[in-house]
Length: 246
Image (cartoon, rainbow, N blue to C red; front, top):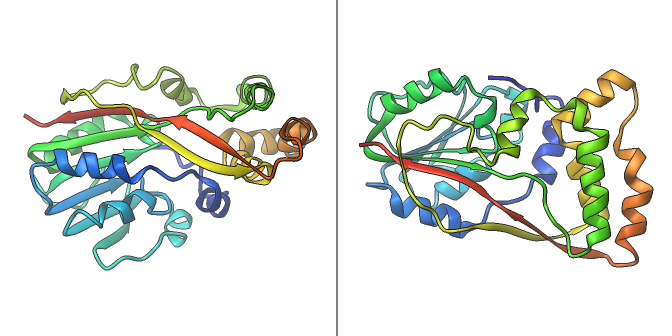
């Protein structure tokens, strides 16, 4: 598993969008019980905290100590620095395993072997992701697309292709469950969008290669497209691959 987010852990914690509570509730209701959940590659613990409202205990792991430093404490969450492919839990521990915006970085064979080991019978594995957001203005969307494809495109890791393919290229060992559509919807300012861009791994790769921040290249165009509006509605449909262990 690659670690592409330790360097920008603070901006990741501040600017990454929030998953809808309805999604977490839906997945919790699919689980065979509410005893234990594992949020793998938890980052700043956003999903883990939401899971703690539904489960007696949550193991939240990440390979990055810097990410875990920004995680929100919760009495039902145990944070641990662990790789996705090597979980410290005993066999058949978890009712639900979640991976949010991270599975594309994993060693699939090793991770799914761990899933089969630590997931209880009838347990649920939920892979969650998202690609580019859309705004309430086509000119803003054009600037964002230009930044993603033309400026940072060459600097994305090869694993990003799984996001662009809506997770359809990821081998999935469980019996897949049809899921309703879920969206992240929020109000952002232009500063929020620029801050979110700074959390991209491709932006950090660009900075290391070129010595300057590519966000500065599109900031004037983004602000011009944004206009005099303070905040705008942002929407992002979630990528979901959810299955049950049989």
